[in-house]
Every structure is written in structure tokens, then in C-alpha cells.
Image 1 (cartoon, rainbow, N blue to C red):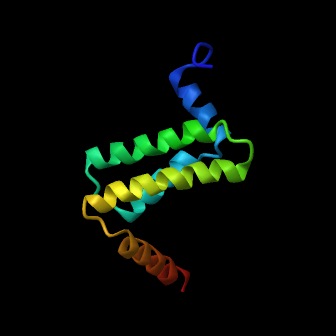
Image 2: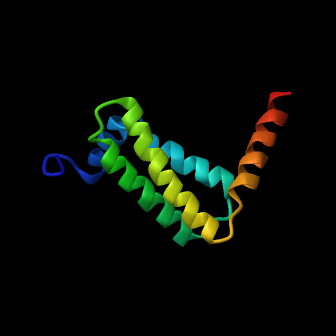
Length: 102
């Protein structure tokens, strides 16, 4: 595939094959943790790219989602080890959503 496509086109095809799971998950991390360092962002992105590579070979949409869940767990463990409180961040996001609905 990469022989026929530019790197940008290759990324687009991969994103389409996985219903833009990488970008959706990455944006969720950036919303939850706006103060991630560049190193942390690149590691989270690396986990999600690996998830996308595996998800492209999945037979069903559920299996594609399962790959992202697995690698989201790895990213969560990485961030928890760096001192981020995922439960608190999730509660804050939900609270903001609740406030914006009113």
C-alpha cells in the first residue's frame, strides 16, 4: 500500500479502515490531560498507532474497538505510572459535559 500512496494518503486509508479510532482516542487523551508533555503525547500516540495497525486486520467493528481498548489500557497504565489520576480526569470530563448540557 505504501508503494502506491504518499505517507499522508497511507495514514488516511488506515484511519478510514479503523473508523478514525486513533484520532478519536488521541483527542480524548488531550481533552482529559491537557498538560501532557510532548514525550507523553508521543508515547500515547505510539500506543494508539500500534492499536490501529492491529485493528486494521480485525474482522469486525467490535474486534477493531477491542484493539483500541487494549492499547488504551496500556496508555492508561503509562500515564498512571507518571502520576496522572485517570479516575479524577474522567469524573472532571463527565462533570464538564453535565454542566454544558444545562
